[in-house]
Length: 185
Image (cartoon, rainbow, N blue to C red; front, side, top):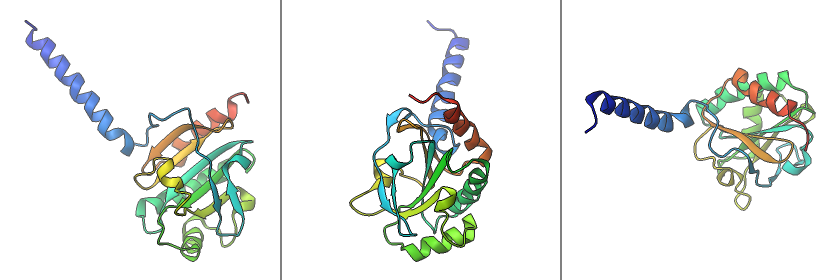
């Protein structure tokens, strides 16, 4: 028969495990889906170009799934602006994808101006803004079930990290640096 002390230890470990499991998506910790191939993305940007994930494999790609009406997405865009300033366009490409099919390019452009502080195209700086479309369904294919969702793709086209909720620029820089230091395969 187990001792009361043993039962207490098992109960504490169980509660801790369940707590971490339930809290993980909201704490900005990396997900269980590391090292799976990133589904292809091909979306028209609000600036008239086409963003193809496969065209941006010289460095890391940070995919930001959001909607303009989402307050945490606004906060995340401010953090992404800080990340954009910390890395060159060759090291890191950011693509912000609005997954609300009812919104249009004008709304996303106004959002970009207000929160990313770009009054025009940001593509030259390595930050693309696009609308997800029915048929492409980038958000669902990447598991973006809550907003914001961030996904970091390495140079080999593998999802290395994903986060749900607002993540600070400092917390994002470590995984991006890790990918930058990794040898190209």
